[in-house]
Length: 337
Length: 294
Image 1 (cartoon, rainbow over the protein chains, first blue to last red):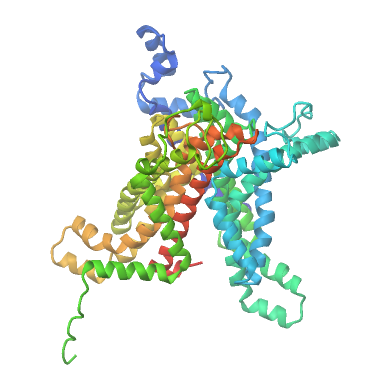
Image 2: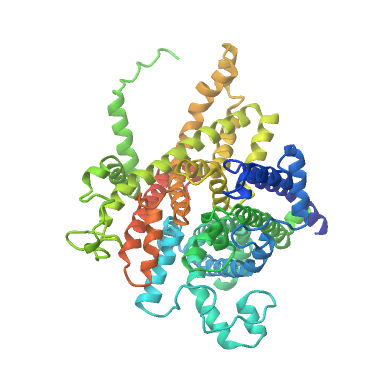
């Protein structure tokens, strides 16, 4: 097992190098002269030249790249022009909000999609099977920001069940003392039931929006993989031995069907992390996505680049985690490695 | 082999095309439905500004934020502009962005993939490495980064959407070309003294083409979603221009005060278009490549 994890870690290195090169190119391909841009609109030619020397933009590209990498190694992602704050600090402060939302979205998605896929596979061409197909096709066709707005209209405006879509916590509540940065967990640690409920209420709609968007690949893969496992010999043997339907379905079939489902999680995370940006905008969620969008509209590039880099590194790490999980679940993968 | 069979009577190209189309539609009623929707979208693209009842940019503040009625089928927005006209006129721009980006990625990814599969070696390694690097990013986030860097224009949205889809096309084209690199007809063409580029274009490409076309129709839906998502967060298309994503963004703030039609109709148009392309792509794939049917 440790050798397998080590091998996967080594395999992630080329991806990380690629990510760093691309984000570096993104910083250098700024329209116009980056020095003139960073010096501000009213800068004199001398000032621009000073900025150029200060940022090292007069050096050859390879030297600039070395400097960029060493900055990254020191956790320096530049400074936001609009807020004057270091980008790394702001991303770090806002990351828990995004992570809490994304993980809950994934949880919602799995809780809906996996049972749906299992039921659809046990009764092919039944109503549930058709429902599974329609829901998963509709799920990928619905623009995620549109789903969010519809949910807001129905559950906030019409029914009044959900709170206003304005961030992580209603203004009357105080954020729980920070331990993990996840309000749900922190409020539980602080034994503050009211805050827990309040933040859960704020989370339900955005998490549901993300869940609906990403359930299609999970449901489809669960169905397909369950179908093939259910027609295999060992399931027939288990049935013939008189095991209960539930045992056969969950202990025998699902455990074997879960591997391809885990593989699709990589794609699901690509969906989720992207959709997260849009959902954060709809629900005024103070995460890293809305930070990047605000910066984008103000032509403030350092936060956007920091955001792209952070997302990519997280995505590489998540894929790594999925691979390791794969080895934990399936001993055959471990033997091959 | 006693005698060669008389050549089958060949239909004219038009008859053959119509027969093929009827077969495609008759095979699966859902595909037929999607095809009808597609024709409707094409109609809106071609005739858009001519069939819209109002000027999509003309504001009439006396009529601002009116719900759907007989005069304004989809209601009016905060400036009193007719939403029905705006949704119809916007079809052309959204469709253009999707078609342009899909055509661009077809050229880039298709040719890079064919070359990688045909030559192997370093070409294959370089193309594979580029595809892997793009795949290391969450796709929408990379598209955001590209548009932010290249500049906030519609053209760059097209480029970003194309780049993000590159790995998909390159991989499919590579796999298909790789299978055929040593095929008999390729050997024959080489013996006839054809240069590599002629073999690539006249022997390999026509064989890979149908599968890439299916991929194009499958990615059209994603391309529309991606572009609309980018304009929803304020990239690319500028405000008075009618475009579905930006119209949803403009209507978003009215959702909490109950003026649902502002964001609903452009969003629904977006959804119908994407749904249509996804169904159409699935149907086409079933016909061209039945093994991948799910």
